[in-house]
Amino acid sequence: MDPTSSVVAEPKPQETRAPQSQSPPDSEARYQRRAEFLNSPRTKWALILVGLVILVAVFFLSRYLGSYESTDDAQIDGHVNSVSARVVGHVIKLNVQDNQYVEKGTVLVEIDPADYQVAAAQARAEFADAQAQASAAGINVPITDVSTASQVSGAQGGVSGAQAAIEAARQQFQAAKSQVAEADANNTKAQNDLLRYKLLIDKQEISQQQYDQAVDSAQAAAATLQAARANADAYAAQIKQAQSKLEQANADLRNAGNRTHTMRVIRARAQSAQAIADQKKAQLDQAELNLQYTKVIAPVSGAVSNRTVEVGQNVQPGQVMMMIIPLDEANIWVTANFKETQLSKMQPGQSAEIEVDATGKTYKGHVDSIAGASGERFSLLPPENATGNYVKVVQRIPLKIVFEQGQIKNHELRPGMSVMPKVWIK
Image (cartoon, rainbow, N blue to C red; front, side, top):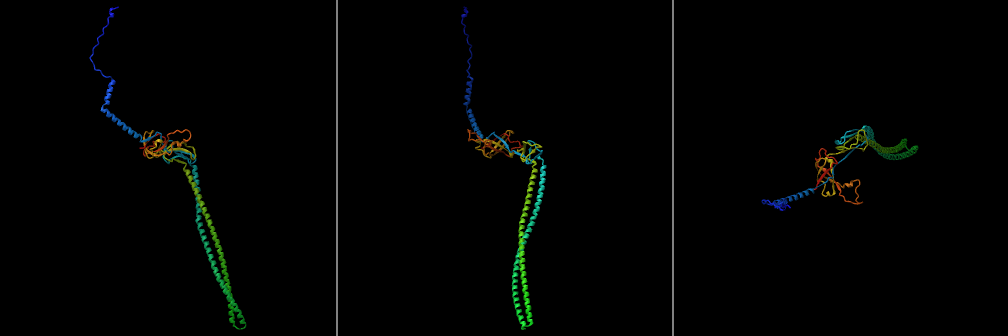
């Protein structure tokens, strides 16, 4: 063995260093700094202030979120006016195109008016003829009325005159009969006196002159009796004549009464003629209306949509040719389908803000009305909860929200656009 291998190596002396201060680890330093920061009075007050700010922010945020209700199940709605033909015909001119904006009263489509012009001319001629006949029939009414009234009055006067004549003739006949009786008595006395004077003249007891006077008196009495009888017969004839006149007057009165019935017939004919004239006037008005209907005009101002008519097409009454969508703010509104749980504090008149996706603008409006039933009630197959398994589903109730005046400009909104309304309930 090598002796040198058994020699143990002596350890080297360690180098001596100057003593240095021991620094704490990094985690301990950070902990100490955090502790100093948290224990600082400024930090405590800052944390308290931040907490108060957060509480106030949460309070106002909750109040803000509870002050309105909103939904994304909403869209712009509006009227859709159908334009249809009112008469049958051949389209000869089309004055509008799809999506064109037209004013109310604009002529949209023109139908061939030739047939309707002929019909209007014929109706006008028939009305003129009926009106002339009605005028002629009407003229006879007052003339016949006056004539009938005169005849009735004259006949009544004739009856009264005949009756008065009969009464006068009867009175005169009675007086004549009295005169006949008186003349008969005088004649009888005169004839008796003549017989006595004749006996006396035969005996020469009276003079011839006295006898002649008796003869004259007897002849005069006989003549007076004959005249009285003739006068009585004349008055009797007058009574018969007056009775004949009374019968004639009564006949005239009955004839005048029949003229009254004739007058009713004439008046009825005049009314019938006037009714026919009115009927022809109605037919003329209808023909002129049909002629006007050959020009289809816009019922409202709006944009033309869904046009289906073309030049050369034959159209029928009631056939829809196009749609007109009014775009003014009076005919545009929002239909918002809110959940039924959102309606507890909603009512008409509340202000609203409408955010429109298409324009990116927010418009002002207010709640106009709330629908009378949920949307499901108006569906093709409304739910029947009394049958089958029932699952409660939150229903949606449509609300109508209208825009404030001056909000919509340049017809920028269209029915069907998606919107997000926000209704302020507080």
